[in-house]
Image 1 (cartoon, rainbow, N blue to C red):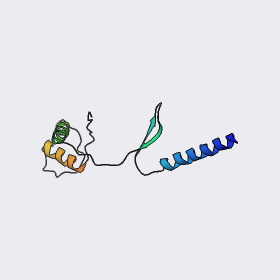
Image 2: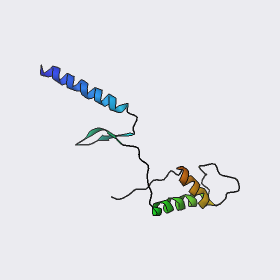
Image 3: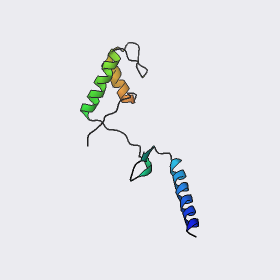
Image 4: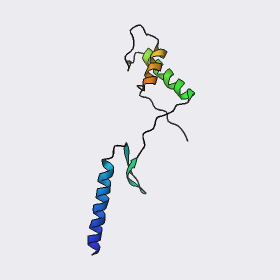
Length: 102
């Protein structure tokens, strides 16, 4: 009888893993000594401080001034890299993230 209980437990774990893998939320697979499985994250908007915003826009403006491709459509008369990077930041097109120390 104990073998039957183990197989039903295995089936329930398998169905649980299947139901979590089909979820629409972003997920991360974690493999470690204390936890193994999918960790579901909620999608939230990132709020940057004014210092983080200035650093991201300045770094992107430097990249644009050095010849990096522009990631959004801009008018032909706009040539200022800072203005272009502000538009990219506001549209969310800049592929930079901030690593915060908590």
